[in-house]
Length: 295
Image 1 (cartoon, one colour):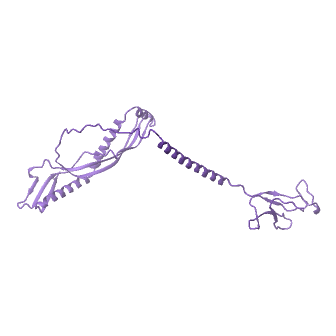
Image 2 (cartoon, one colour; image 1 turned 90 degrees about the vertical axis):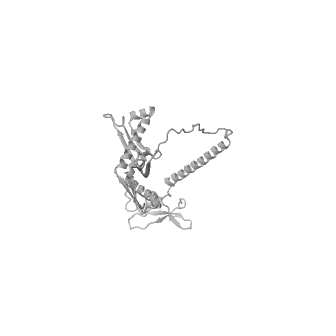
Image 3 (cartoon, rainbow, N blue to C red; image 1 turned 180 degrees about the vertical axis):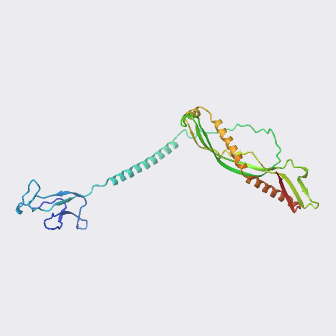
């Protein structure tokens, strides 16, 4: 009487004479057939058949006659990856649900707040009116304006103290404009000359000059600042207004230097001044207008 184990059965595998025969368990398939289960659990060696004259001994010799090995298969357990994925999805769902619940709870508390609307923030401007102190006459014709941006790199070292204890390194982004114009307030008697027919005019003007830089405080800022330990402590208990003013003063100097390095701004001012005067005099009957600039 044979012994059955579950639904598994064995199928012998062919081999050469004298070699081990292996049996492979089969599982019932949904379509009615049999298919091998995956995963090898181990090998089981049946006892020797006494009818075949073989006898086992301690050294594993079966006397030249042994039955085939039986390969026992098992199904794979659930993979750990799938369990971790399910756990991660569950945690994400709990987080989203908790956030939604917290949002709903805070909204409900805000709507149920009996003191809502009783307190309001209000800003009152008590500034006085501006007082005009002085009026200055300007004879400057602003003909061109240049916009500049630059990086101010300032490093302060305290020798021989290491930089992580004392000193600072600051990168400051500076932005500003420099104007170029012609002074028309001090023109001499011979500055404007005309011919007898009043069709030709020659105008002599001073060369364009550059104005002081105008820092754009909305676009200027400290990009990065590394300070030593002592400087950080000093800054925590002190005022850094003086250091900020030094940065703006240095930025103003760099803007002036950048504007004077080239003649692009002055040349544009001469061109615009010449075009403006020609546009004013030609409608008055002047067919030729010459504008010269003195050094």
